[in-house]
Image: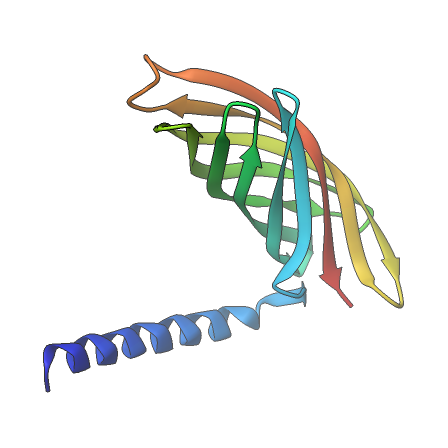
Amino acid sequence: MDLAGMVNSKLISASMLALIIVASLSSIVVVSSDPQNGTFTFSVEGYTVTGDLTDAAIGHGGSVQMLMSIDQMITTSYGTVHITGNGAWSGETDFQTFNGVIGNVAGTVQACAIFACQNADFNGNGTWTGTMIWSSAAGSQGSGTFEGTLLFTGGQINGTASVPVSGNWTATFGP
């Protein structure tokens, strides 16, 4: 078997292992949703940043998990800013309200003007709250607010810069 064949078979094996793990964990979930099932927004320096909330799930006992991701290009009067990042939202619900924490937030910001780009990495954490409603057409839906802090570091930043953020979120947890 050539190198390409070995690499492809290892990728297939890793993919199958991931699929088996996900399938075995999916039996734990009571309520789950479509892959792209929510959004969150916040403003920084007058610009709105929008991200996705995916894999929203309510487990036994009301435990809640959602994954967040950001991949947004913002055009400013100075150039473009590309923001990428991800994190995890965890918490609990009493099937009327939500509360939880946001953790493992990590990402990169690249700002480019005419001929030069600057990069900064960020990490962060926060808290989120909200309320749940249910409809026979849409299933369980949640919405609320969040707040947190992003800590920026990078070659172009001397030391670190802390930026507070707050915004809104919505998610559908499926029928």
